[in-house]
Amino acid sequence: MSKIIDLNIEETAQHKRAFSLYSSLNPELSASEREFAVAERLSDKDVSADDIKTWSSMFHWEERAAQDAQVVQKGLDARSRKEKLREKVEGLADKIFKALDDKDALKNVTIDDGKTLSQLAGALDKLVHTICVLDGTAVDTLVIRNTKPISDWTDEELAAAQAEGRARVTARAADEGPEAA
Image 1 (tube, rainbow, N blue to C red):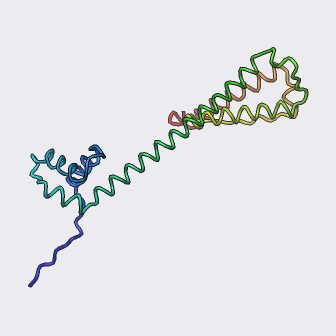
Image 2: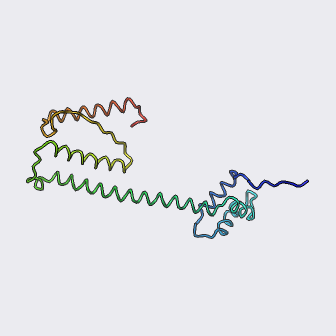
Image 3: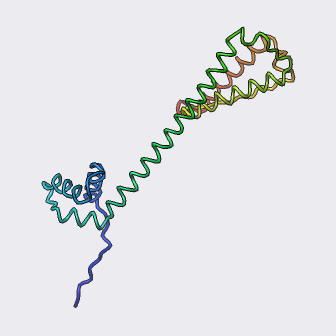
């Protein structure tokens, strides 16, 4: 009667720990140099260099390490693109807010209709929203309806709308619990 050998060995916790050690080593080392280093570190656990070489081949450590490196690099590239975009958006927002603060820059500019003012407010809101999304900050948008153009609002009406908005945000946060904040 002949023995049947099962070649589909499951990766155990010990194999996974060995791979973790293997993948944490300098990627510029050759595969055999990394295998030797893992075997040296695990020698007290009755693991030989031949065991590590077998595990490395059987569980495709070199390919897995390369895939992990690609995933890490893609994450770094995405974070770098996000940082560059955030810097550009924040720079644009800074320029706009400085221009709005500079009375001389705006002395010849007249906004005499509510639609233009509303569009400007909407554009600034989208800019701030984009900055918040890039920073990972929670963003709440509230719509306060009024038939009058915002340019015709009195200071009291603007203050009341602001107070209403803050109250609605506070109520929403209370309804959703402390985890929502």
